[in-house]
Image (cartoon, rainbow, N blue to C red; front, side):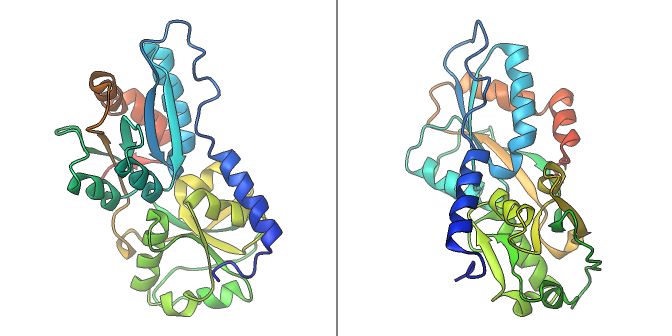
Length: 269
């Protein structure tokens, strides 16, 4: 098993933490006095949480439109949308899961665009003294020792897929493939490291910045993995197309981009 080094009780505790951390609704939802219509249902990649908490709050303050935002792995959200979950807008952490919905004709035509970019980093607990230089053939397995490497699920979670691609590109994948602690989303992988369950993990730069209990050990070269791109689109099934389009348009404004960049995101490549 991927997480055999993590006790069942600790895994259950971490899973509970992750569920609480990825609560589906803003605490301020519904508190705007004169909200215009029902809340927009936004499905967003887990790594967007801090940035979207801030951007969503700003949007509600500006327009009176309340938002109901669900955060999870892009793969899980896309599958839910495919099964008719009532999402108005979807933000994925990679192109593949947005393509997945496009191939099934589930996007509202003309609304898809690339929203932001990110970077991939190797993290350890805040007290870690490891000094690692990421280069072809670097000794990641040696740095792990008897520990495991926390990553998103490498078959489905975008952060995990990027991590595997980077490790393969750097010729170290085979040395650590049996030392993984695979998580259901990138924030769960972050929690493994933050709570000291694993000595190292691979997450987005923005996740590392949001968690004071971890530190960035090293950054992966941008050319070691596919570009990290967050596409956004209105869903074809939306019952509020104008409101959904307005929210997507807002995220392209200078004010919204300033919020995303404050949380570590960069303009989409």
